[in-house]
Amino acid sequence: MTPAPNPRRARHPLSLRRRAVRWEHQSPTWRHARPAVIAGALKRALARPSGNWFVVGATADVPLTRPLAVSVAGTEVVVWRDARGRLVAGPGRCPHLGAPLADSPVRCGTLVCHWHGLSLNGSEYAGWEPLPVHDDGVLVWVRLDAVGREEPTPAPVVPVRPALPQSLYAVWTGVGTCEPRDVVANRLDPWHGAWFHPYSFVDLTVVRAPGNGTQDDTFVVDVSFRLARRIVVPVRAEFTAPEPRTVLMRITDGEGAGSVVETHATPLGPDELGRPRTAVVEAVLATSERPGFALARVLAPALRPLLRTVAGRLWRDDLAYAERLRDLRESDR
Image (cartoon, rainbow, N blue to C red; front, side):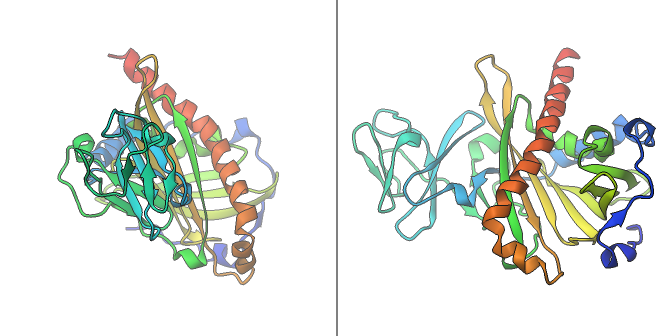
């Protein structure tokens, strides 16, 4: 049963804290952040089907004149737009002599290899075969059956989002020396928010966690986003993992109800030392019923860099957290 929302929050988006609690004086959360709860939530998330779909970047990362190139678990992939602007995806190696197609331009919807001029229009050619690709309007997904090794599905598991015309959205991407499971585990530990990120979160309480007499695998959190030392925006949010490499945070009560933050983890392949690398692709989709939010959408080009900066600051710390989880797991083997 979902805890009852607090209707005051929707009427009063900003709150003035009566006193600023010093970082070291806030309530400890370590007793509630039980390793078994986090590990159980992670295990259930990793067991959910993905259909072999991987997030490879933002929709805006694929212009008309050059491809988006990524490596997913060591498999080179390129994505580009055909003459009608539709996405095309396929292996990142030229079928002629193996040139990296990542460095090749797109001309009139055709990818032209920069080594010897072989042209690919998205159709099968000389052993090169296109890959299933999906554009959800914010992110680009590619299906790699040889990597995922699951039962393939026609489309990825895309979380329910606010409608794009009523949203302000931005996408941030970073890379860490860890595995996707470490990124997911980080997000399935909401208790660390106010301790590890005091510049962004205060007054954090986990209202409900999985395993507390419910079959609903959802974390429910009351938290305040810090705008200034004493000015905050209190909200209620839910954290879920709809598939093994995605964690969704949705604001369910308070300012911006319906807004979501999607965290997607994509394995890239090992670094020069053989350590795993993972791309974190985080999509923020903010919405609000307040009349003034229309101005925010008009100012979207100017606000998107700010949203990316905020996400990047949080992930500067959280990637270190995820990398630490990976190091500890390796040292225990």
